[in-house]
Image 1 (cartoon, helix red, strand yellow):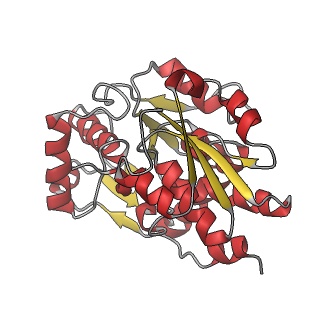
Image 2 (image 1 turned 45 degrees about the horizontal axis):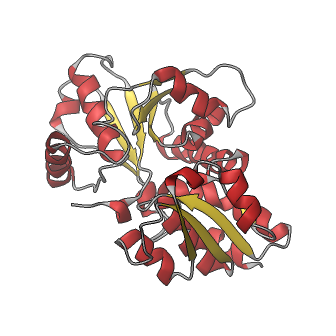
Length: 296
């Protein structure tokens, strides 16, 4: 058994946990959280699922080094570094921001400690990732920013069957945050439920749909894009969001982070208040992990 196979086969199925909040019970709505934040201590949530088949492919083709891209607080950078260390790959991360250092924050420090070689480039240079890959990535297996590609979609799609086997009843809505579109694409590729997408970026709904469509071989998707919950843009946070996260964690005892899951859950609660869902609806929210990037 190869190291990649052993790594993924030793990971248990994550819990499907009901959110026991009178807020939902009083309205006749059931919300479950698919706890992919518990999937692995360091390769967390959707990053675990996105990397799975990419690492199988890298091993199959005989690559020894993984190269990928990310910002200073990238969950994907941290997860790739940890997965590479666990499965015997060397790793290289091209990081947006030439003013940074390997010890600039806990995310980059962790990646460096896992053995990832960090290359810092200007924000202008970072825009041309294809050129950077050609300059740096000879002989490397290249994984896109955020880990989103066709193999990532295949990995994320597996969560749908897990949810169905755990719940054993129809789901009305699957909910996910959006960063690069791969996770939403995975859910849409495998589920008959309605998919609600909560972008963490300040973008329009059509732009978000195009981000998702680039990972699917279809022309249209049946997803509803909720663009009102970005709190100013990617990585931006307001006191209202922090207050919600603290209250949710205290009452429900499920950790959230401020970039993805916190914004998604805020959005779900707000939609319930506005009457978006009907009595009897069953919702499943995907916890995409990333708690290493929590800043408060």
